[in-house]
Length: 420
Image (cartoon, rainbow, N blue to C red):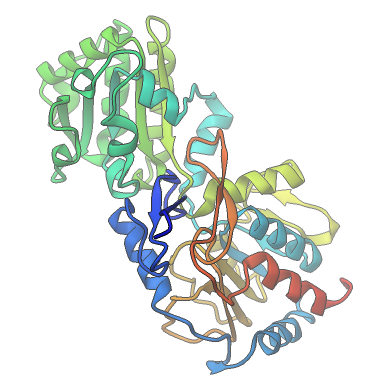
């Protein structure tokens, strides 16, 4: 029997590269995949539908011909989704330049970290540094295990070069009230739980910052968190040799989301006056870091952006896809999504063209649907990992006739002819 091949999972920003493909059954989910990964691998293996035009099955060429015919007379399409690999994003931007389109990633959460970084800066770290050096982890929210299921297994519950076994690592959780995260932690870790109302996170983090900085503060104003727990948390933060604050921007909902990220970055800045602390904003799921990286490499500005009038302009308020759709500024919706299954916005002002995962199910059939290969499953590709320090190759684990996003969009560009 041939030995199992290792591969990299594309379904969250951890990009776990220890998955093992069964050489006798490539349709089976690879070993070591988390529940999220297993579901996606198995769902993609169970479907093999053709392209569609107005809900009717057609060949790939016919679908691309129909998409080109719909797009030629239009002036300002919106290209959304963007949960693709590097080659797919390059092709999306080529299409955007040709059409003068607006482009925006499906995840609005990316802006919360970007704005804090632009306004205040940030001291960030890498997965390797967290695994090998962090002796204190401050876990904000519960997205670190809901959205990144193997974060603890791969990054936290391992021996450290700095302090030895994980039993000596201290972990503080800022849990949303009603969501117990203790079961997701290493059983022998030193754990301190602070249960908070999500809207009070900026206040609580600001209070911790003030206490670390020896500024006057009344711990009794922390709401549900007992003052003794706050004081113990501050003692752990001061004693840390390498502390890390971990959060996912998608968890920080509501009007105070960006304020929470700003409060975290301020706290880390204060802590670095006495010890060493860093930020670990978990990201990279659904290709958000990859899309923004390619956009920045090619244009010098981030997402969302407009490629109209032969130039590129970035504006996170003006060109965010919900705002563009609400103002009725788009005359077509092109949805490109090879990794995730996020909902496609309702759109009635023009044609809807979808280049999507083969297992996508529609409430209403788009004008054109082209099922595309998923990088790391039925096509090779590259994605930027969640700590933004490496780009990993994702080999295909099974053969498929589905075109990659890059191949399908190049075919569409060839049919569109020269730009108007």
